[in-house]
Image 1: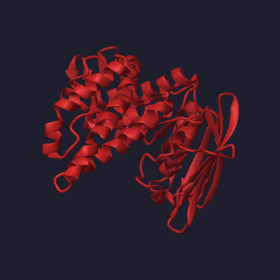
Image 2 (image 1 turned 135 degrees about the horizontal axis):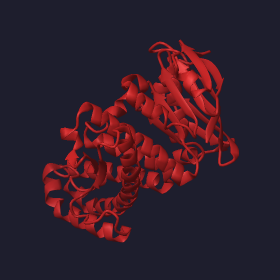
Image 3 (image 1 turned 45 degrees about the vertical axis):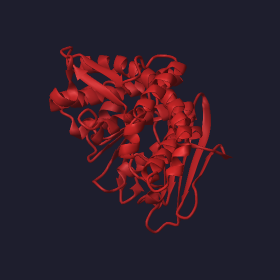
Image 4 (image 1 turned 90 degrees about the vertical axis):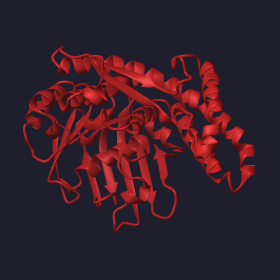
Length: 367
């Protein structure tokens, strides 16, 4: 899997720019605030239909531009694809693959997949559960279209139920439709739990190997999936998970009505990370948490390869500058085999080490 060419028009600080990329390594350097991360953001959007930074599509349209366009030539599954997204200020976006309209983001993920790694990801272990859930969701939405659909529908059901609970005191009649949304969340939630457990099992397996190698064989990393307490085994059949999630929700009905909050469901799930049997969030050093985060992101890349048969495009956004030389070398030794984009502030030793192409970005111009 590789991105051969990218064209941008009106995207962030880019006017009209195009670049042809190397199939192995692409080093993008320049001063801060020149557009390096914006370029990677465009690549991520073409694979997910969603930005890792912006909350709305309008944020990605340049200040002086009426609209924005991102398009790329992608080679995947022994075929060439043309992927295009048009963003507008006053109407919905348009997405297409080979000039055929794409109904949703899953159509983009089926063509191109990316693993995006930025400095904030080095705090993956120390942050709250929401960050680790987002890590799971981002990967699974690209890997499993059914998961992406279930997650989107679960989110809509969650929002509806939250409004019912919030407004029920003024409008008690709303409680009549609450069971419908409870049942919808239970059934969709079981699908989420099913896929998250499978993902976590593979993640723990691959990340443990990477962490052990980076720590010189001195430390053991373990990642476990945590969901609602009534689920005895997240690896159970979906039908079993439905019953256990329903039981948990029934037990929390009174508390939910009293608090006006959704208290039951996999929207509170987490990944429990331990190093040598101790909770990494609480006891690990800064170096250990960074090594664990590196291991998790590299494991994510391995999962993609095993599912699709191809390495995803790896995007490293100024990550190496945040690592000590030992961890830098560890990452660089494990990124072969697929296409890689690396942003940095200086044209340093990376091109000599990795080969490929070098691009200089200044004020939204790719040179």
